[in-house]
Image (tube, rainbow, N blue to C red; front, side, top):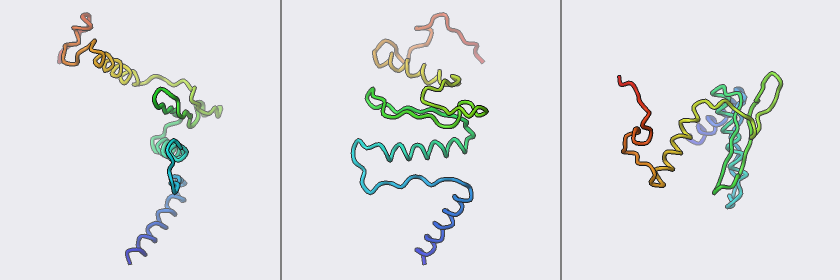
Length: 134
């Protein structure tokens, strides 16, 4: 009884995905060999495209780096929709909020090097910095 229910649910889910034009994730291979990133890339492509559709993101570029080596880079969507120019790994995007992440990374590297301490006031490092209090 439970198996029949699960099969029926699976068929209904597949029909719903097909009706919504949402592709299924790629099938996992029988064996995964170390160093073979084919399945990972295929799964990420599916996941990224699905996320872009859900969030209405027109373009995205990604790069995976392992131990200073570029493993994979790819663009998704269109850098220019009107002209049908695809996004590539070299597509230039507006900087947006990425500066916060870059600054946090730089500060943490300085902390790691012992050149900065997280518990010290920011004015110890930037004496000209001031903020209005609430």
